[in-house]
Length: 298
Image 1 (tube, rainbow, N blue to C red):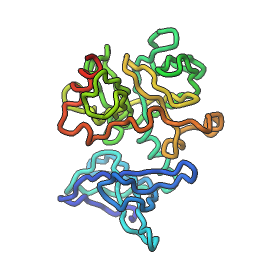
Image 2 (tube, rainbow, N blue to C red; image 1 turned 90 degrees about the vertical axis):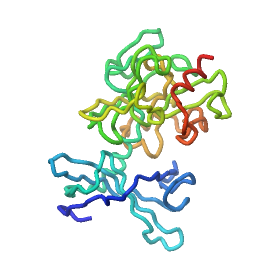
Image 3 (cartoon, rainbow, N blue to C red; image 1 turned 90 degrees about the horizontal axis):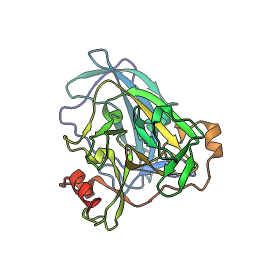
């Protein structure tokens, strides 16, 4: 890729799912088994974060990932992961290539985040806006009672593409008020009856997999303030009455957390409810919001 060259998305180009796995020890990425493109197990390198300028003067960011051949080590495929919508038959001028900031940009897009104005349940039952929280506050968790908040992250980003927040309307998931979170933020649902067919009553579901165009929507446009809440361990807390996860620090999200904070985290911390996440395929052809809402109140 050459700076100031103009690139255009092929008219027949389609979006495909590139699934990743990472090694928490080495930090290396590989193509996951459930991928739609690429060779499962092949090494995958996060090459760079790039910025394009569109014809109207706005900028669009993307990540470039490179897959290598397991036998020869040669480049097998190059993938572009747009962080905002890129349209066919439109010329985009390449204005920056950043090979040092790619992991931080990936971390920003992968982080689970609440938005300004979200009420968080404290240990004493009070409802406090996420922007008014401070390290040292005691927050109610589902599994471990009152836990001390160790760190709060905050970024302001354009609310487009991978950063467009998901708005869950009041009542959609038995929540008293609307809840707005980042697309990858997972909500905890306890099904009294396993209506969804997950094989277990406790499930986690990403907010973006609940979008139905009515009671759960992606809000595109403008800017959004994202807040990340970090505890000693991965926790389930309560936001607008909905059980939802805190930030989990792994190879992908680690660059967003300051070094001194990382050093104080428990080395053996593991994600809560590992293996309980519903995939998009589990929810295909189902009104997931209605089904999960009914299952949690039956």
